[in-house]
Length: 169
Ligand code: HEC
Image (cartoon, rainbow, N blue to C red; front, side, top):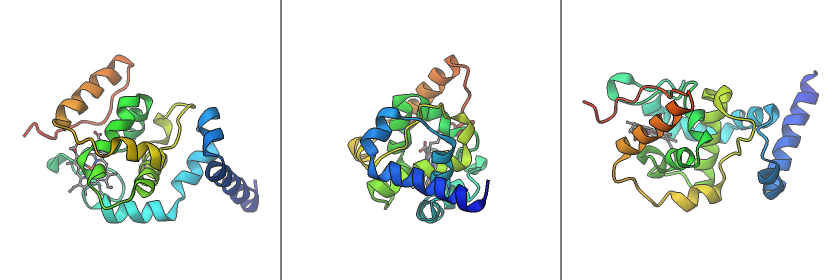
């Protein structure tokens, strides 16, 4: 496929996603083109580098000795559970960042598409500003317990997210 055609398809997917969020949510398919266009967002890339990359590293690997978990082949697993999506929005590093709701949604989509594209199901729906705004104000009393619960639920589905050392000293 020529570069032009690929660019056109990506652009078309983006245009559809922007112009018809309701339709996109109803059909809800995480097409390859959709993941590609989310991964290519320059503004999300910049926002990630400035707001998240210092701790999570530019390649998403995290820093094990600082208990910053890796996103690689892992972060997309959380999108399989409604509570997992909420968790991704409500963790302190995301919820308390300077980013607006739309920007945070874009960064989460960018992270999933770049660091963990093979872990999402075909019915993956991109995060939206509305979804982020609805749950972001609710801070966790105990983020470690929330992560452990999600981990246990994912394990039951045969899925193993990245090691999580935070709070275990
Ligand atoms: C000051 C360092 C720091 C910054 C900046 C930071 N994080 Fe984090 N992040 C952490 C630590 C530590 C954890 C593990 C503890 C926790 O769950 O909060 C974490 C966990 C996470 C998790 C859960 C990962 C998992 O496997 O459980 C997500 C999602 C996340 N961060 C997203 C973000 C996003 C998005 C940004 C930028 C908008 C960001 N973080 C900025 C330190 C940071």
